[in-house]
Every structure is written in C-alpha cells, then in structure tokens.
Amino acid sequence: MKSPPVRLFLLACLCGLFFSPLDAGGQERLYGRSPATGPVRRVLVPVTTTLEASALRRQMDEARVLLNAGRYVEAVQLLDGVLAPRLLMAEPWMLRGYARFQMGDYTQAIADYSRALMMDRSPTLYYNRALAYKRTGMLREALADLDEALRLNPDAVAVHFERGNILAEMRQWAEAARWYEDVLARVPEYRPAWLNLAKVRMEANQTTRALEALDAALALEVDSHALRMRSRCLLLQNRFEEAWVDALEALYLDPDNADVYYLIGRIEQQQGADEAALRSFEVAVEIAPLPRYWLALGQALFDLGDYYRVVEACNEVLAREPENPMAWELRDKAYAAIEGLHRQWSVAEE
Image 1 (tube, one colour):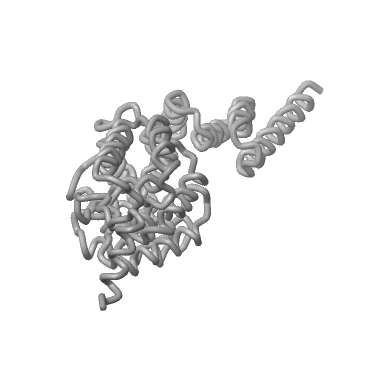
Image 2: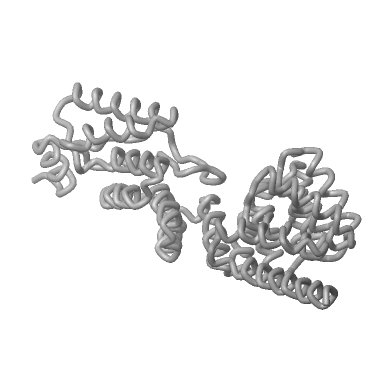
C-alpha cells in the first residue's frame, strides 16, 4: 500500500503535471527597486514533454529580455500566447502584470497579479500588486497587500519602505516616520529613507529632526535635491544665511532647475529683497511654468504694486488649476487694487 504523498505524486505524473521551478535566481533583496519580476515559488504547471518544458523556459526568458529592454507591448503579446494554453501558470501572469504596470495600465496589472496570486502567494507578488493599487489610489488595499507581504517575509526592506510611502500619502506623518525609521534601523545607508523621513518630519513641523535626517542623507551623498530640502527647512527656521548657502550650492549642482530659483526667490522675499525675488521667480517660470511658480511671481508683483501683471500671473495659474483658491484670492486683491488706483486717478483729475 503506497503512502498518500506517493499516490498524489503518481496521480500528478499520470495527469501530465510536474513541479517546475519558475525562477532559479533565488531570493532577492527587496529594497529600492521598481516592481519585481521574481522570484516565484514552484507551482503546479501543465507541461506534457521535456521538449515543451524547454520551449516554455525559452519563452519566459525571452519575455524577461523584452521587459528589461522596455519593450512592454511585445512582452505582453508574447505572454498572451504563453497563457492561452497554460492559465494555471503563475509566472506569465506575473510578468504580464509587470509589463502592464510599466505601460501605465495599472488596473489590468492588478488583475494579472491577482491571477498569479491564486497560484503562488509570494511576498514579491503582494508587493507588486500593492504598487499597482497605490497608482490607482487604492491605498488601503495597498496597505493590506504590504501587510501580507510582511507576514510572509518580515525582513523585506522594500515593503517597510513602501508602507511608509503610502502612509505619507495618507498624511499619517508619525506612522510614516516610524516605518522609515524601521528601514534605517535595518539599512542605515538607504538614502531614500532618510530623505522621505525628513519630508514627513517637515510636514509634521519637526524641522529640527528633519534637519538631522537631511544631514544624514547629505553625509551619504551631496545632491541638489537634498540641499534644496535642507534649505527649505532652514528657511522655516528663519536661518536665512544658511538657507542661502545651501540654495546657492544646489544651483551650482543643478543650474537649470526651476525649483532652485523658486527657493532663492523665497529666501530673497523673506529678506525684503522684493525685486531680486521677482527676477528669481521669473527665471523659475521661464524654465518650468508650474502653477506654484506663477503664484509666487504674482505675489512678488503684488508686493511691488504691478497689479496688471498680477492678474496675468494669476490667469496663468487658473489656466492650469481652475480651482486654485490662492490664485482667485490674489487676483481679486489685484482687481480691488486696480479699482482703487482708478478712483484715485478720477479724484485727481477732478
């Protein structure tokens, strides 16, 4: 009498099934990367011959080559052909989900990852689906998937980091900071966690602690982004000279960055150099005509009494953000100031 495991194995052989390793690359470190394409645990795969198994492996390898080359549409077409006769395979669903994620088709990526998860509940798949949920604004569903990924692999640093990101999007600053701190306790050199930790601390008005995180990030690498963040933080503490030094260094490293000129204009405004601030905001708008730069330019023009150009600047904002309340308010103030000037001129003429 054969034991139950032996009987099950023989039944699988008779049905033309065997266990196939879909990824021989081994477990990977999960942090600081885009949606993963592996690994996937062994699953039951319908393959009838060794020759078919070899052809299937070649197709999977070709799909990965296409994905790595950014040829996502071709990868999807190839995987469609693979999946047609083999709906019970996790790997093609996972790879097609990855391709569709990269193509911006997040809803279909979620569907493909969900099909893969029906056959292989790996932490990587839960992590990938969480990223797709995040892109569609389904933040609670994303958190649930990340929790499941952590249950399966508590040491996956990328999952801890992404959980902090989602909590930050939900404006839960203290909770987000806790998860970033957890990442840094595991990987102290992971610079994105230092930067994101600084950001949530700034949002929570913890500027001193934010500066500590930024100092740690800059100790690992000096770049324009971190210098701009530290300059803004110093500006919030009214430490204008130090903020100015960081802003100038950021400008040296990235001379075509509109945000640097915007930041310099903010510092100049705080120091009462309104005309200099106006010129900085004009450069920022010329490089990148974003609403917040136009709004800053409009405020600088208002401070200098150029009300007609204030209206023009506010119209630029409203063309891009029709519901921007600050632009409406500033334009109304400019109109009122123009009317006041007209009344003064009328009285003077009389």
